[in-house]
Image (cartoon, rainbow, N blue to C red; front, side):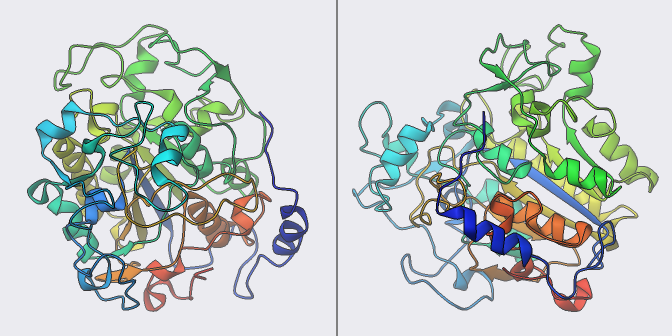
Length: 431
């Protein structure tokens, strides 16, 4: 499916790509900041209000400009604009209900930025359970990580709609398809769930740019090794999966991995690996790529419904962060934790206007927090960002110039507002 761009973006992109590098940037393949390793953990289907609406304490709508901790980000409102009180996402409530999060539903609920139809939208979209907030006893490990690092309260899913369409921005920084409308043709595990609508793409990705610059990178996916070993069949269900299925959420899903849509990187053992390879690198102190993306298996991804508990995913992420912090890489690694999309849940902050690059509408805010020695401490960034901002940072730190894909990486803000220049050695741009 070809990249769609707004006609008005052409001239803007040409200018931004030409001017995209800052004076401090090094040549391609040389690090800019002291950050030697980046690990991006991608969970699923929660808004900022879901996970941090109980952490933040500023009044909803107050738009604080301070940056020191929970008093400087907005709490979730006591009700949504329709008067709906939030459901508390206990593990039982989380496991029982998956909101409709197609693009059509998310846009109807966002209602041109009024954020007032999450409980009442028609056509099987609205539901009172869409207005929900995490049980603080379950989500507290994330609050602790945010307090020890930096959190972004204006980080939006790049396109309204389902997971796969948003994941693609972590590879392309651009629109590729809508919702979960395509599954990766020829990928390991794609037929385990009988998935159809197969597609593949050949546009250049951030992975291609890293390969050209000889910068190491990988996607690490939980359950991938078992799927490969199954040789075209579905692997045995893990004992701790909450439902009696050998398919999703108990098995690896390639549609969650954007590099699986590209023949150059699809199931390439240099880049596509089981999460056990990440653990081996952490434990052995060698072999960690410069850039890593990490994906949990479905029942540990925090995706609502399907019997999936929030606590299982939060425990999985917390344990992984703990292993990173206990490894030989702790002193030179930046960890980012984010979510692919908001899952159809309510958030009270209106998204930005549609992107000038591809014309696609933003969805709700999702959490992004930065952990490790390079992150500011107990900090709240109010800079508007999205998944393409991670791509832009990778370009800035390892490739010498931003905007090399000629997509949203040329226009979105960078991650610098989350990072401490005293630790990074050079100020990472915030734009």
